[in-house]
Image 1 (tube, rainbow, N blue to C red):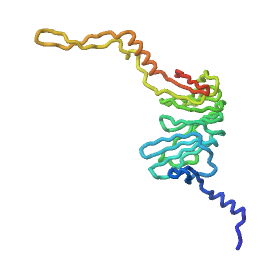
Image 2: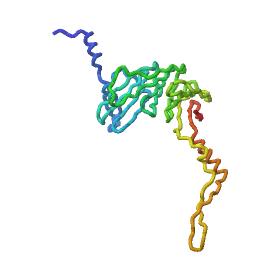
Image 3: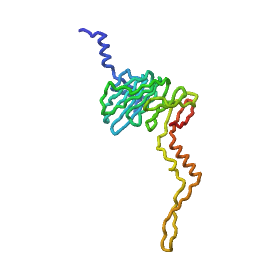
Image 4: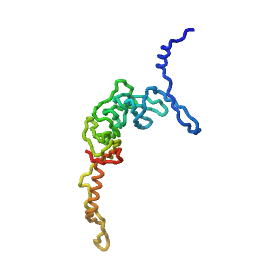
Length: 266
């Protein structure tokens, strides 16, 4: 009986790669090991470096960044259904270090160990997978090792923490660098924005308060009246300080030196 040629066997093996098995500690037997199969993933997939998940009604959307520089978007339309890959791209040549989804939820950003920052589409679950989907914009910043990427709640700017001890602020719309914050002496690893609140006009700070009083007009009736009493200057100053602190566009940065810097930015 003729035997298949070894070359043919190798080609068939490549067409049908074996499933990936994961060994995890058994939850019942402390000395046992359980096996799990990861469907729909090839053995060429690299380590996951960053993730983001969003839940909306019955839909789950997972965005992942990989050690290979790839980023992918997976969506589950209904509970129990298989996850569908709606987007895949490799704008980075080094591992992805951080990512952030815009408040508008129409695209997301990735940063990497290389000097690239990329803006990607965020397809909806109703969208059909299209191979022509690609990053909206890929920017070569010339500054490698930017991580801790965070987007401000108004969706206008984002910040990164750099291995070069610099915190950089970029425009979401143009992807251009707006500011470089220098204070730390060693690498920075994290950033955080305060939630944006609407600024109140200075006139909104109260300078006086109304106090109800009763004044006897005649022996048979009493009419309620109010008078204005000035608030103490100490209270007014404190109110102004609180209002200013709440309206300030704070940006915090953390570094390897164990220190946190606080910045008032735009």
